Image (cartoon, rainbow, N blue to C red; front, side):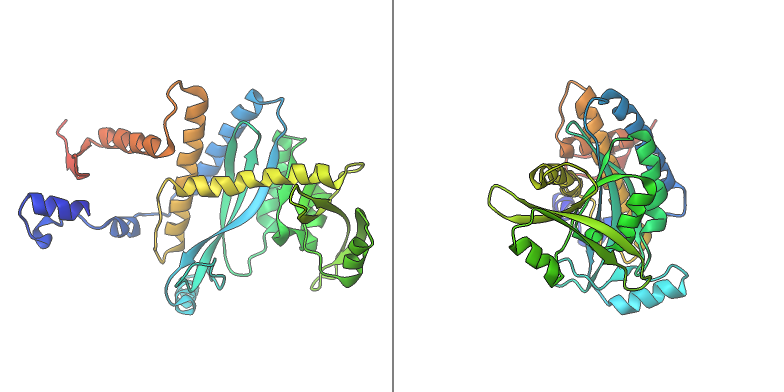
Length: 328
């Protein structure tokens, strides 16, 4: 739209006015083989260390969830191309309820939150069929060394996985996880009015077993929640109040979307870069709001970052959004 406005004002044709590639073309030309992801993780952990000291009296939560970005195109064809390039399959069949989508890219995200601040501490782009535990386990151990009393929160996707409870036991972590209730004998226990019960969960592939304690809770609207937890002496209502803090991670996803770095790129690295950049700017914005007198909105904060980068690179932005060269 800005290019069209520029062409109209300068009485130029579209061919004459197109002085630069489209934003998508610029994104596709980025070289993404560096250490930017490792730098993001180290930066977020350094930020977390400072904030944990500042808010040492607050209760901290570690939330785990997946987020998906839609893919439009030939999913199987792209997966074959990625396999031939040595990357693996990255396009899932899940369509994320997006009209026209043929699949999606999956990102596993871990956040560290308290009532005062929300930190997107780590992110990994998942390949189809890739196990979560090898990446999650050392990360959670590291976070629990930083915040030993943090409670781990996760949704039903993890609540139905035996390996998740075995991992929680192995790292000695407190957790509250929403769990789907499928077995008839467990449903009958709820119908009889049991507020909590135990059962053995078995992994169908590995045959490993985990003893799960399930609590039944109801919110103000009488909606039932089934929560698995290793807390002792707590009610379902108390656990539900703890579990609701998982929405901090959902809100990180929503707020990061406001940074407006969408991409339709077929490159997994480009998808990951845009997601990481959104999380990074969101984290910086929160830090700025906590310790600066001026409370910028997220969009204005991003605009200020862009303006600062332009000054650093000796560029300027015209009133209609054109980036021009400024002599030193």
